[in-house]
Every structure is written in C-alpha cells, then in structure tokens.
Image (cartoon, rainbow, N blue to C red):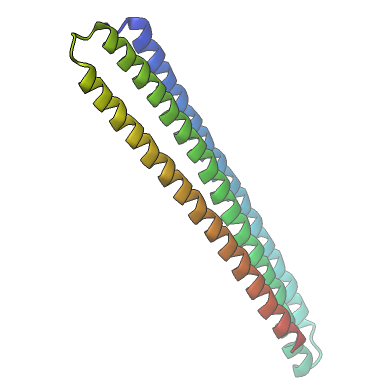
Length: 180
C-alpha cells in the first residue's frame, strides 16, 4: 500500500479545484453585495435630491410637514427591501458553501474508506478488530456530521421564517403609520 505520485497529484488538483470554487463563490457574493450597496447608495442619493426639491417647493408649513411624513414610508420599504436582499445573498452563499463542504466531506469519506479497504487486504491476521473499530468510528463521525447538518438546516429555516415575520411586521407598522 504505497501512495503513487499520480495519487498525490490528483489529490492536490482536487484541493486546488475546491479552493478555487470556494473563492469564486465568495467573489460572486462580494460582487452581488457591492452591486446591491451601489444601487442602494444611488437610490438614497436620488431620493434625497427629490425630497429636498419637494421640500423647497412647499408653499406653507402644513405642506412641509405632510411632505416630511410622506418620505418615511418609502424609506422604510426600501430599507426592508435592502435588508431582505442582503439576507438572500448571505443565505444563497451559505447554501453554496455548505454544498461544497458536504461534497468535500463525502469525497474524504470515500477516499478514506477506499484506503482502509486497501490496508485491510495487506494487514496481518488478527487486525480485523482494529479495522472494525476504525470503521465504527468513521460511521459515528458521519452520523454526527449528518445530525449537525440537519440541525443547521433547521436553524436556517427558522431564521428565514423569523426574518419573513419581522419583515411583514415592519411593513404592517409602516402601513399603519401611513394610514394614521
């Protein structure tokens, strides 16, 4: 049971490919956030200009107060939309990184099992107990990882539900304030 240069090269290539994939995923997320932030700043600047023009065009104090009150609801709605978009980018990126991690863990398990099976063929008699112990340990680690993944997914789903509920509550408050 010897490791060949081809196996080392293949493992190195797989690691580099994995790292490049992760870097691309992170870069895409950064790019999305940069675009989102640039659009938010542009919109905020344009809104400020339009609001200032409207305020300077007010004929009396009552119209000035009404204009100021009318600016709040669109600003809140835009803030909610921005927060939701940031959350979506974070959730999407997290899902992609989780998939990559799951793939790497699966590949590692497969390679380790293959290596272990090769080692068993060349192992001296009586080493069956040690091999069974290692396989049992690997199965327990995989089970723990699967449970951790399930709990993480459930926590993510709960967080998404809470964000959606909070968004709806804030929208409801903004509409109630607009009506009042």
